[in-house]
Length: 348
Image (cartoon, rainbow, N blue to C red):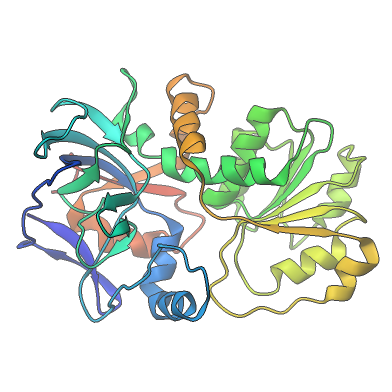
């Protein structure tokens, strides 16, 4: 079987990956589409940092835990696949069914991560194993490419849910990459107004506008909180930090209006510094969030299938397994792409 893997800090294709065999409670599925996540780009560059941080903290999440970077690492966690075979004594969707799933496997030793694994092929592979109890059937009529974006869009829904934002409050979104766009889309579904979004990239600003932002701006020429005020923002806004670069949190604390809530959804891989006095003086609240729960994942899939959440504008390119390495390079330019899909029908 073929798969694109991370090896020595770069993506390459292996042609001799052992064929996965489903065990009890598992199913074998053929990957039809998989989105390339920004966290995969970060992991390719800073995987050692992530592994070290996880090993050094208590209550570490399953994500990336125990990964050996000296071995090939399988990646690809925004996927949609077609069921090929059920494991022994396993109930689940019949072969031919299109499914998606949260990117974990349930096993006798606990949860196994599908986002970064040395042993479990994932979405950048021709085929992969899934836990039958976790898969979600893709509603009839929804294409694999759109269904694959359930995972990243669920991240935005979770951030909005955790924020507690309500209609009438309004929001500021700093950073309009895939995570920021997912937040904007969820805010639009909830009827939050106004939503003001900031990004340096003209392409991303245009996409933010299309996905539901009421005002967009270039932070090099305008101040996001001044634009927030001119857009009709009254009550303290909920501010979503979706950049993940050192210094952004502190800048938000310095400039946010009194009693605003800051929701950090951008994943900063390095150490950062903040000035507590900014938050104390203005009684700001800070909320960190990651991922989503099963209900949010299923709800996002329904919203996409019913047309309430249009993900088509996010898809800016498609490649096959052979094109994964080039796609990683292309995604480094925010003016060219938002989301590139790895599909079974393109380039090998």
